[in-house]
Image (cartoon, rainbow, N blue to C red; front, side, top):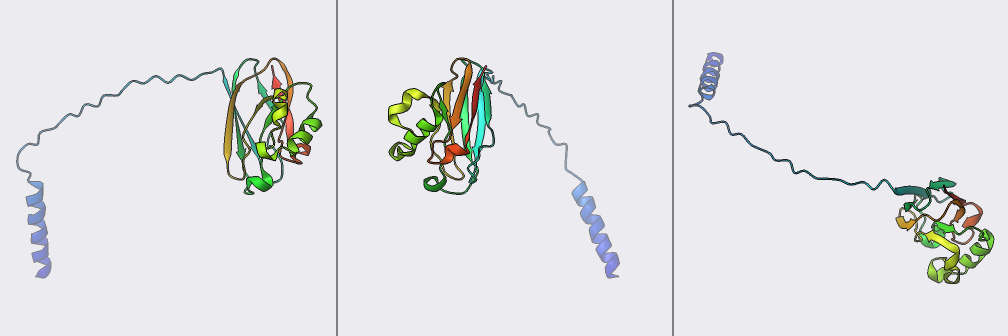
Length: 167
């Protein structure tokens, strides 16, 4: 008996719910898309290089075109702090002795290992960062040639170096 009562209650409930009262008005919603123009500067070379706690860059060669705008991003993929395992990228002018520059940089702690009396020897450089950090620098690529790049943190030049090639 209970089963029949429950079934009747369900039947009337469904009948009552399904009997909508009247016609519903359908509203049209008009969505206007705002037109935006995105301009991408194809003349910007976006370079990304990573350094780790093993004193290694993931790239030993970077290429750009002469006169091209360059955005160089350095990512420190390690975990060790800047005081112990700091990294930067320093692109040196052609003809600069890498080891002599690195020796000057090693005693330039106050300026994050960028010797202030040797700025004329540098094309561009990033900030000094520690594990998990990211830094970038933007500059115009110099004239055609091959330039050395290094990490100027003391002792890192032995393993962290490469060629910046301008075509």
